[in-house]
Image 1: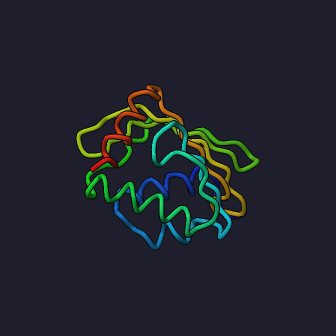
Image 2 (image 1 turned 120 degrees about the vertical axis):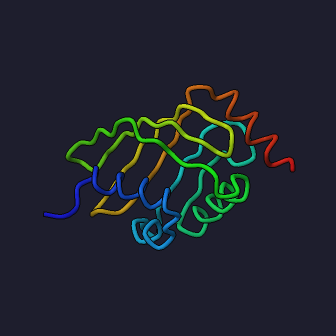
Length: 131
């Protein structure tokens, strides 16, 4: 039996907290897709590892390495789907976040994010990227 979906997700949040780029990269399928919600400069769909890393690079640039997620709960099923309830931070910006994942063969296939205050999320990223 391979790694469970919950283990993949918990591993990703631990790797993100440790800034373990190799672990994050190893867990992504080459054709992974990220869906970033909202109406701000980073929202949209990122197809493939290169696009995902472009998005993550912009997030790292804005955060200056100060941010991450506190995992409150992770729920998974037997088909590789998982939902994580989180508190996310980017610098001093704190918000409640929901991540939805699709894992296949122990690797990330698809990712969606949702924020409980979408307007605040849009405002934050729009202003942060205005520089």
